[in-house]
Length: 275
Length: 170
Image (tube, rainbow over all chains, first blue to last red; front, side):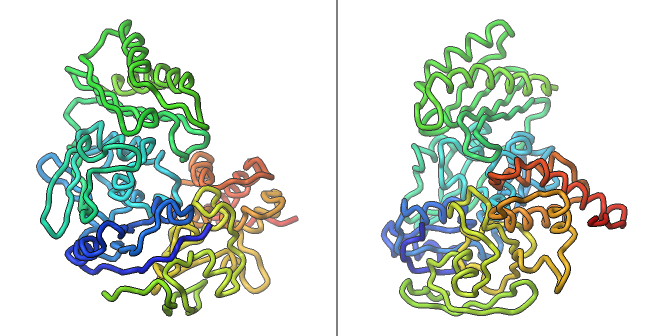
């Protein structure tokens, strides 16, 4: 398994990336950490004519906290976010989810924006972006636009990013005061793609549940705070409604049972931290 | 920045285990293949070639990364450490000695990658315990040991580092 041939360019400036992407007519790929892209290249699932390396872009290795929003630049690695001192307070859901994202060895290079751009339906970061109603800032030579998580990810490995656009940054709303957060997943091995992943945000009014690994993109639903006895029924209804995938990793039956059992556990975890 | 042509070879230079090395690479060449094929540095092993098995793990600027998920062209000017850099002239590193004492390898295919990952943990971790050793090891597949002896070896080295007293090899 070796990558196909491609030209390579290190971009020094965002406009240079935009120019390369516009000129290449959809045949260029952006490489930040490369932890998904190089695996795809090795398997020849993508065969771009040009790979644009943005890892040396100056000024995009930032995590800023301003007016209730954490903005994460396109060269920030998953490890950098995991060890960002403000994480536990500002983004408790990501604090819980990041240890599940790949392995330490891939988080050291893989970027947060890159995982969102890759849009794997079982990946943890797109799931968290969806659960938190986060946004992605897309950049191209035509300008900038901001898409909400549910507008961005449209299917398996598919985003609404146009061929000449790249994700410049992500915006995560910070934790609501008193809200509780939970995250859990089941995979064959810690760090592998989730068979089912569950992210839960509990506030004093509602429960927001996001599920990964069950469909073509993260599935999000919102319930009023249910009495305990109704929760199992609600999770069971949800499991059946989602028409869960069946593949070589797990049957639909197993995924439905995970939504019920794992879902229950993670909802409990979120409710337990409800202030 | 100029566009590097796919069919051409481009010279890269970087630091490998403390020594400056250079070589020519096409943009598509993986770091794992550059190390083994161009430099003849075959200590890092190539298993799955898509980032799952961890055998090819090396350290770039101190961080453990997959050399099969890194292009050689990306490491121009960086600092790379491989398993060949762990031992001194005639002496194994404390981690390697602990692996031998605890029988933490059998066939040895996965070992170079595991040693590089654990060396990052031992260099950077202030609190090394079984949980975070196992978390680091989750990025590696070992089909011989069942991981128990690897964990024991790493715990012993961490204890050695903390107490400043080396464990005897006997």
